[in-house]
Amino acid sequence: MPRLLSVMFGSRKRAERAEAREALRAEVESRGWTWREAAPPPPIEVPEAALRETRRPSPIWTIGLAETATGIVDGRPFTAGRLVGYAYRTSNSGTAFGDRETANAVWLALPGALPEIRLVDTTGPDDDHGLPLPPLPAPTALAPRWRAEGFIPAFANDLLTPQVAAVLHGAPPCSAVVVRAGIAIVYGMPTWDATTIEAALRFLQAFAAAVPAQCWGRADALTAGTGVFPYDLPAGGLRLEQRLVAPNWKGFGLAAKVGWERAAEAPRSVVLTRGQVGDVWDLPPRSGATSSVSVGLRIGGAQLGPDSNHGIATVASTLASRTGGIPPTP
Image (cartoon, rainbow, N blue to C red; front, top):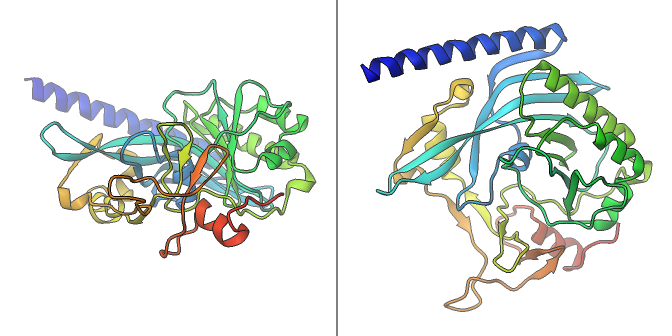
């Protein structure tokens, strides 16, 4: 009887979710946007910003997008969708499995290049799985609601004018607003419907329009970059030189278990074999047999290590190759 009740309850919940998706589809299409119930994962810059998680030993891997809307505003493409991924866990017996995690996100292409910056909504949801960056001094115009993170304090001061601060005041409740890789992302909205998507788009349009002219076109030299996994240092700050070389957890095991086509109805957890979760890491060189701390420099609370031979752009390699280890002056 308990199993029968569970099956009946599960079927009803699936039917309710399907009805909600159909209602969202109708709302999305009524606005002239394109709807997809499921889609492949976006470029890694988006899930890395909104659904990566560095506060646990293993990151979240995004399998795809659910309930997506795409279109054009101000002549620039946008995407809205629920990022769906899995965080690697192990049971007490050592069994490997993945726990499903999601994040609602809307992102809009920007008209020009901007250095990376992250504005955290301190009043937003507690389940922020985004990639943290080194903290920046709070510009005077920024309201207490927001905390600035990034790599170039001078850029934050130039960007966060009273006009931009006023736009941020009208932002929908969220986890954070992130500028990186030529796009502006707002993610972590607690609700997911066409009204929320529309409000997020209006905010991103207003944000892009308020960016001071002198901020556009700056070299995006300092970015967290593809494949970088910062983690907290015991003494404070972030360590940035650890890189993932072969993401087996994403491409070998997990994708075979849960393809992007199932993103809208992805199971709450999946069980994996040990061979399906073996990531290959590019670890910093050891300074001694008992030490794993590499020699590097510290900028804004971030520990930067040496470059590697894998050709993956990172904060550390960018600094070493372009500035000789000295941060550029914007």
